Image (cartoon, rainbow, N blue to C red; front, side, top):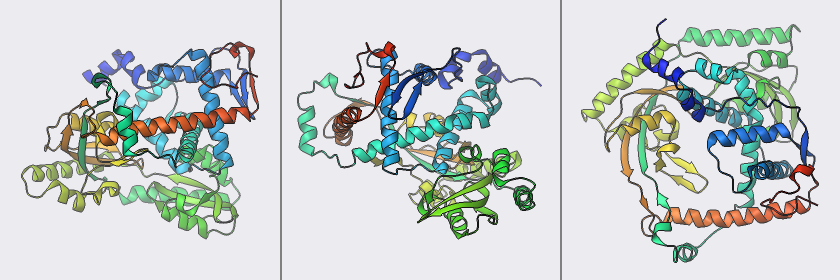
Length: 455
């Protein structure tokens, strides 16, 4: 089969791929424990993998990377350990969503799932399994940090005082920001595809009930939830509010661990669920997730419809905002008249830097003038589903040096972040004093950011 010029370019320019998608780490040495923090070990391979990822992401360390990389891993373990003590949780659904978004981003950058698997020398399933613990730990550490600084506040006078003596050329540069409106439609999945998935799930139930195979084994073999499949479909203890409503209703109605739920449709696909244990207002269960395949014919038909909607919008038959309210399937923006929201640690805003937009949206917006409407395109939404979309560039704010009058929110966030950093640094410093630490001799000459590692 002949390849397009674009496909040939992708294969012929591996450097661009390497910058976009990290390769799998493959250290060629015998592994060993080099740090111990509390009851957590840090392996030499952990450090080498972190080094490779930092190089690929262009991270510059403030100090010797040979010292700062293992120290950063040790600090993360302090936060993760405290998160466990404080019962901070990350659901498997949240982990799965984050991993799916990462994989989809890589696929968009490299061109296809097949090219991604070839480049990383792993299947998509293997990538998801490899990323699971990293994403879970990263999110646990982040939530612990946010809990520690949730009461940190600043006053307007603090912001003005901080920037009062900052030279004009040292003021932060505010990058170009955009406001974007979006309409999405999800391609219709044929009933026969849905029936196929349901029949597969029914067959799994029959196999468990007949004693042919355990639920956990079937989950490992067939579940499309990367977070739980590796553990036999098993999820952590979780409250009702952390689950999809339909999934929660079915799971919490289970009372007998030997029974399997009826097929449940959630926003992620179709499930069967088995209860493991109940502890107060939390349950522990295992599940199998199957996702119906969206046929290309359905995607093509939805793209034609979206193209027609875009043409009507350009002809002013109705406004983009009214169209988003009535037509769009995207429940995150539908009630906001299509306006996308950028939710950050500092709060909620409608302004995005281009790098903060989903890759497919950014590509469409880049070609638009203010008020223009894009051609339809496909993307993967936050729930891992394929949708067809059109966007409108509502406004663009060109990059400039920050001013108190125009960019007070940005300046406030800088001052607030500085105050939070002080609180976190003190917490880490105090935590080190009360935590067992053992460091390999090769690191004892390091100039660490925090005191107390070497005793």
